[in-house]
Image (cartoon, rainbow, N blue to C red; front, side):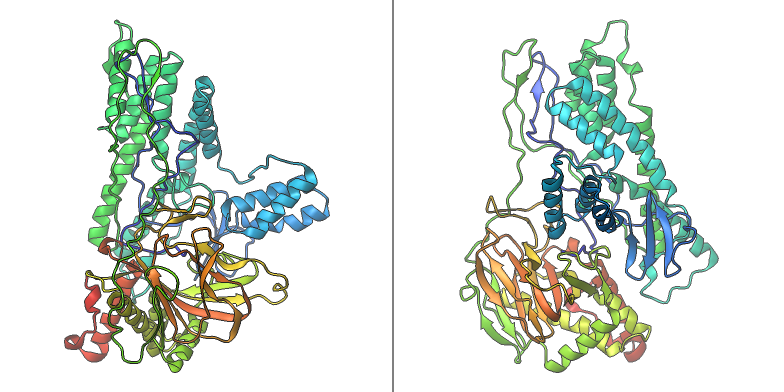
Length: 639
């Protein structure tokens, strides 16, 4: 789903490096633990694109800049980077030149960053069949990430010498990539936090904004370097895990000094980690009597890196206070809640501890006795179906939520403010190549209205309609606490001419809104990169003059359809966001399908940041036109 901007974002996926992760083992009865469970480091939350020098001879529409090895374009839609997109353009010429192996690698490179692209996946299978090639090459792979994965594979196979070689190479590559990433942050910046207001800075403010933006960008390199292609969240505890693997690998090959050095390096990031503290004590006991353990220090590059990261975090917190922008450093827990025991009578041989499951955590099953059927609040709103009639749990279908005139006005707003790929990092066809996806947020609508690019009254309607929908959902499901906006998005899906014959794909694949749907296991894993904080969802439709595009609920197998809903003006479907409600959208085969998509949360920590800013804009507009005594601030969304 589109990536929201919230006041707190969980940045780490539960992805574990390698397979078959073991918890830990102990050596000689009293010491060394081989822990494989991840720890969470603390990369920054602030997102800022790294910018560099203008590219010579590049297009004049927008500003092209080089970001790492990638040419990027700053447009109103955000930062658009060519990188892997270029590889998809190479497919046809490579195929026509009969360079099928190169075409297969190009397709694989594109697919790594676009795993939802089903047609590319089919192309890859066809290339494999034609060439007999099994192992494909990612031409845009990050060397430090590749070396890390190789090292973890050797570690899993207990090939510790090879694991050390790959992991040390990964560390060197990581620190080199960190320098390159930070260098690319230098250059002209846009302080986007203030773009929704008429912000005119004095010289010293502009200078402070500029360098704060550079600092945000550089601080974000920690996250960027730990993120695999096509993923939204970085590998959990990525950099410290290098030292965690190395400390035990060095022990296994008998290099106790280096084992202690790596253990102390890991403890810089997680000083209270009991398992590694015990390991370090055990390594101390293995050193020669003539060697003082105090002379063995953590690695200098790790100490410098962490010291710089903490200083940057402090500066950002100070800047957030002084300059008035939003910045949140994540608070993470590094200690395991599972007790680890070692069997007695262990001598010089390794003994495996109890096998503790590190599997994914399924989303909790929805209580089917949850209340619904509360007031619809507005006399014009018409009840259509409840959960039972929709063959599911926590579902409701309503009509006449907005009028025909309001639908038409929202369509006009959409035509004036939407950008292709908005919410999907500029991907104009994020789910299927047979449709174009466009979107816009409430804050953008208000900004355009404030600037006179669309009627301000129409932009305000988008804001008011979304608040009306929120109130209805909160009341109907009889919630005992306030329902907050998590993300609000006006979206249109347009069928592309000439690409609609024999379509068997979906406009939006079957998914759940707050967990990762696993149809084969009939489970939904409530973990990042899913937006686990979402509690309720709603879709308010704006038109019916298109073909296809039915909204569907399915069973957990993502195949068995339990309910199908034809969109029309004023119709709203709302439901709880968990694995009890897998859903998707059938192919739009003709015309344009538009809706207001809304996601809500019961946790105020995950409120939509743009919604808070939109409230500020509304308050400012009301103050200008009605006076301070008549402020129209949303009573359910106070700061």
